[in-house]
Image 1 (tube, rainbow, N blue to C red):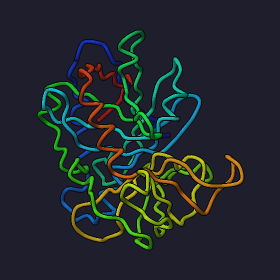
Image 2: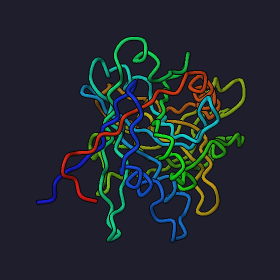
Image 3: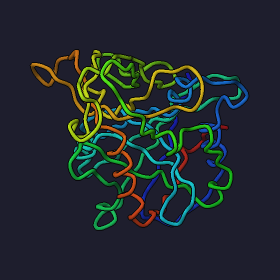
Image 4: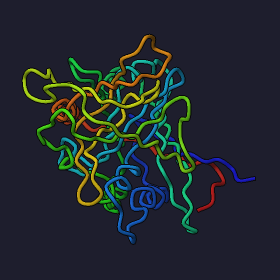
Length: 282
C-alpha cells in the first residue's frame, strides 16, 4: 500500500535547508514541458486550506517578502484562519512524481506560540480575506522556479461588468477534491450591477452554484490562453442557511487581495524548519 506523506513547517525555528527543496521544486514546476491553459495554471495554484476545526479553499501566488525575495503566498478566507486556535494549518499542494502522476502533498504549518503566532498571517480589515507566506530556506529559494504559479501581475484591474463570465476553483464539502487534490472548476456570470467602482463596495455577485468549503476560491476571467487574470476571491454565498448550497456567490474584488498582500509585506519574514516524514523515498 502506498504510504501517505507530508511536509511539516514549524515557524519561528532556525532555518534548516534539506533535500525537500527538490520536492518543492517538483510541486511548483510541474508540467513545464507542456503548454498549459489558463485553467491549468490556476488548477496548480488552487489549494485546500484546513485547520482541525474548519476547511476552505485558497490559492498560491508568487510574491516578494519584505526583503525583496521571491516567496509563495497563500490567499484564503479569514474565517477559516480564525478556527486555527492552537492547532496547525494544513495546505495541500500537488506533487508530480517521476511517472507523471500527481499526488496530494499536505504541508503542515505549525505556528510558533506567543508574539510570532500573532504575526503568522494577516487579515483584511473589512473583507473576509487572509494571507500568509510559505517561507522557504535561502538555498531552496534559489532552486524554486516560481514561474509555474501565478504572480501578483495576475491580479488584474479589468473593469468588471454585469454579464461577464468568470470562473472559480473551490473545494466544496459535497465533493472536496479530485485525484491529485485539484479543485473543482465552476463558472458563472457576474450578476450584480455595478460590478466595479465605488458603488460596488468592493464586492460582486456570481450566478453559480456554491457550497460550504468554497470560500477562499480564486475568481478569474474565463479565457483559454495567456496569463491568468485573477479578479477576486469568493468569500461567501447567499442562501437560506449556512449548510446549504446557493445559486449566488459573493466575491471581493482584486483590490482587497492587493491590500491584504500589502499588509503581509509589512511583517518580518518568519523562518521555517522543513521536517520530512522518516523513511520517505524520493
